Length: 263
Image (cartoon, rainbow, N blue to C red; front, side, top):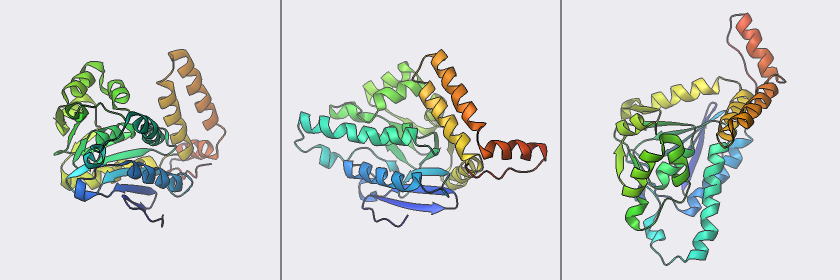
């Protein structure tokens, strides 16, 4: 956790690792370097056994991620360069989505464009009640490029996703909750408490079972139902080969809290 970063901060509090996008001077707007540093931080976290949950957030109280850094994007980028670099950012987003440890988005303000796209990759999204979300790329003459056109319809439905993408409109945190875009909406004074409560609850579960549950859900959603059920059965069976399964069931029978070790 002692690596030096330019655009992010990485810290650990008990079993929770926190990646903070730290570019407050541009409302935490992201550039490709930011995504590369997130990828590096995930390298550290993935093999740190003491970490069981990741929280992804933005510095300050105004923005989670306000979008892409327009000052960089406005330069004369050509088609081939964009086509070469964009998939690398998409790969980082896909890594967040499939990361073996649960990832919680702590949405502390504006989450627009790339901010909404990064949040979509997280397993759980907890937003402050003043947050705004949306994919306004259409207003710049472009479209979402970090998975927004694919993940948003899968999460909230095609009709609502098309309206947000084609109009470029922002929506409030309560509306995002209504759409199913976020899991919780809380006042700023309760944001850290709520994130910690959810993170600690998840961290108390078996790391192996958490990994298997994410894999079954994420991969199953990309398959037909028969294939998805076969995948679920495999993940379920793998859990039975673990010490955590023995500990969890013994703890239940003995009426005590389990002590999961990720084995």
